[in-house]
Length: 66
Image 1: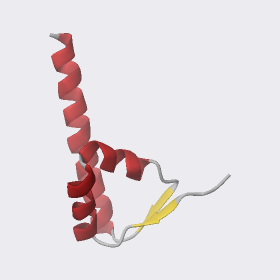
Image 2: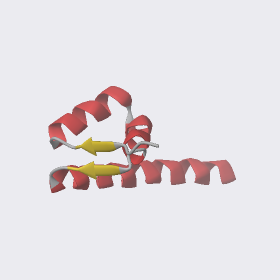
Image 3: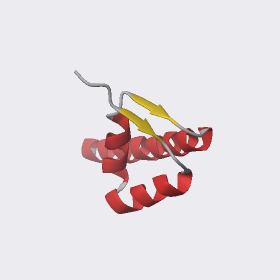
Image 4: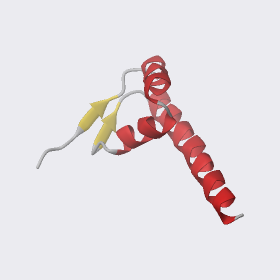
């Protein structure tokens, strides 16, 4: 069994990755790692995008209830 680790280089690289793959795939990819390391700004960026993603999911769920 392996240990999946990812080093976050900088926010610009994360933004480029997000632009290329879209929000859902971006979140799922970074949630799949066992460990993340890197600058605190990168963690703040990812946490912000997770919140955005959760809002989208919540809105879709609310629309399904109507």
